[in-house]
Amino acid sequence: MAKLELDPDRLFSPNEAERAVAKRLYAEVRDLPIVSPHGHTDPRWFADNEPFDNPADLLIIPDHYIFRMLYSQGVRMEDLGVPTQDGAAVETDPRKIWRHFAEHYHLFRGTPSRMWLDWVFSSVFELTDSLEAGTADAYYDRIDAWLKEDAFRPRALFDRFDIEVIATTESPLDDLRHHKKIRESEWLGNVITAYRPDPVVDPDFEGFAENVAALGALTGENATDWRGYLNAHRKRRAFFKTMGATSTDHGHPTAATANLSEADATALFEKALAGRITPEEAETFRGQMLLEMARMSLEDGLVMQIHPGAWRNHNKPLFERFGRDKGADIPRQTDYVAALKPLLDAVGNERDLTVILFTLDETSYSRELAPLAGHYPALRLGPPWWFHDSPEGMRRFREQATETAGFYNTVGFNDDTRAFMSIPARHDVARRMDCNFLARLVADHRLPEDEAKEVAVDLAYNLVKKAYKL
Image 1 (spheres, rainbow, N blue to C red):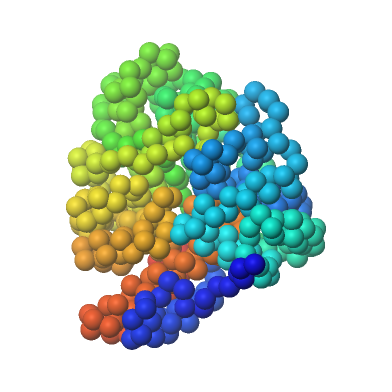
Image 2: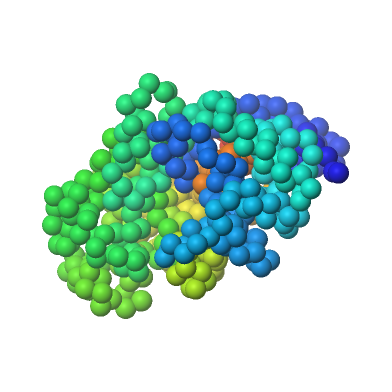
């Protein structure tokens, strides 16, 4: 039976000189608090502080990184307990779900998921044998028993992980009751929200017209009128700020922006509500809304995040059966230089605006994103995201972006995850990889080690707090 061991020098260079520098830099940042400015953990966890139900509900069912890999190898989503849209029967025995996972754990060799999970198993649950079919039940029993302890409730783990602040992500239609409950409790954990308006700015989002009507009902505005619709957004953004929000988030298919006249924007909006909008017009409307959101950010100070480039729900039959966020969102080629031009012409030179750009198209790092962020005062580069939240992705990002954008046009790291237990592991990987990159600069005599120490701390802690106004 293989042992589960985490090498203390993992991810550091095999070159002895570089590894020595990386270890010294890592010692400066290893124990810094975690700032998690963008993610998808459930605020209900922290509001109610109830024990997590079982290992499968905690570690498998919410994590699309896990079941997308298993699905690719023929494991049925139903056997993993993923709920169906029509309520059809799925596996409900968490131990059986866990066994399916353990039997296929070898599929994750070499992936970031394997690295994060091994950290959780070793550092959080103190397991010493590797996960496989033969250890599945022992793993399940150990984790299940510990989840019943008060020390493994959400708030206790939040404190144990030394999370200084975590942002969840909610729709404008969310009443934020869980955030309200957290704020009214005596717990001091800082859980804030972020404004994700996709359901009411994307004409292709299911139920778009009904969502806009609900937005109007929430705000007392006539949201079917263009000006009333924009005022409804302003009111919801203001409400989100009362619940700690410092940012907005926009998951559009592309980075397209537009700068239409009020008459043309009104006409597109009316077509969207009537369900008569073409795909090209829907793209233009989403682009117009990115500019409207940027203008509102100049008014209210919310930092703007743009996460483009995913063909969401690419597997149509899977989407129809199981719904959104089931591992079938696929990266696509993304243009930024031309797509962002209308927005940048309008607000790109504003020093009081922060627009954080993310990408799933790594070919755009050195060609487009780094030059843009290295020039426009309003732009910053987000860290490697989603498919590229990996050691290789982080290395490629630093290698391709630093020479043009430097370190200080980037915003540190964010984990962007639903998998609460993996948050410290993800931040640890980012800190190790940044220290490894900086160590190479030191070894190449391109950066003094004392300056590298300052940069390491900035990348791990200071930049994210500054960028997200935390």
